[in-house]
Length: 242
Length: 236
Image (cartoon, rainbow over all chains, first blue to last red; front, side):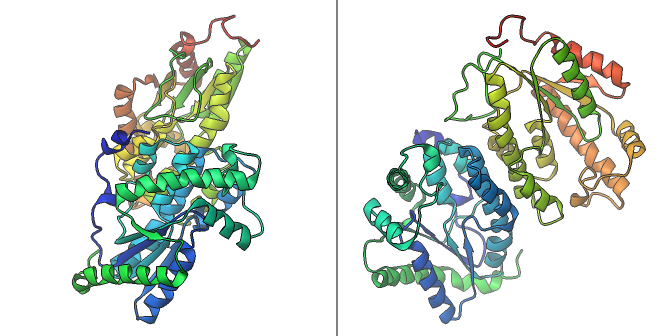
């Protein structure tokens, strides 16, 4: 629980601007925060502006898909293997889908980033400093948007929108409650606390996700636009640099 | 010694590791050095003495089989995913096989341990400190037997056995013109890493250039002093 443990480690790439000409924009938030809707709207807008955009999503790499599915289906995952599988997924996408477009001066949009692991895995019980060190190779995003949502809003969005809350999404592996909705509420509530700490630690931009979708999107576009302008000038000169 | 279990790093905060009364014996050494033969014989010997023995081996976790299959089919492992996938395999076996067996007072024989990852990762250019922190959740073994061999003896043994394996030759690293050169260079670098760890991690170094029986006698001698005393375990 000690923040001193984290600070004792050398600052990883996550604390310094990345060296590539492209821009990395990530969205974070608990399930039901509306972040995926926001990043989809941002994606369409950026493309309409003529920007080359690549999208990548948490836990989507081919490499560990079968294993993750198998592990989840059989409830075989421990906090540590859960964490390592997601790190493997991230490392695979990082080197194939995130770094190359950044080197090529493109915009990368990521639905969830390492902060998801920092929040979730710690709630599952892994060591806070260990999981940060695990992702020491990750680059700092140009913009990291955190869609802050009260737990009740998130729960009602999930319950209205979908059929069923999934086992791991509800943190049922933590045995907080036998009732999936109650387990979800407690699990996501703890994740929310971790996110609050992470926001300060890594400088995430907080978006009030209880506001209207269009109001949030205006703010998102403004922040993305500012980041793109900030870095777009030297980009042309550095594209050939590998 | 087995009463106060130590980890390589920050451990498994959510696991109670008190009362792990068994013993964890690791057999390390490079590819083709004869680890599995030695472990088989050691297991027979221990069981004859009445010890309950469990064996576990690198990449053998049921969880990671699908991912390792995908990876080895030449898909696209880079050095990070290479390191992470094997760490996950190890974590699965540690939590689901090794720790439960130690809790039950059994002897665990591990064919390779995280030292294999340290050697391979470093040879592949992964930051050594990161690699060690990655395995911060690993339990320290009671004894690590290091089957040591020189590259020349190793390559002759492996060629007699059959063809040079893609991964054992480190062909993913482009170290040489042909598989032979690559094998020699890759294994030379691995053995160099093992030799360094042998000192810092206090391995029991066993000369593996000798015949199987001589090696086995040596291995038994090294662990004899670390076996549970008769009647000390709670389960019979």
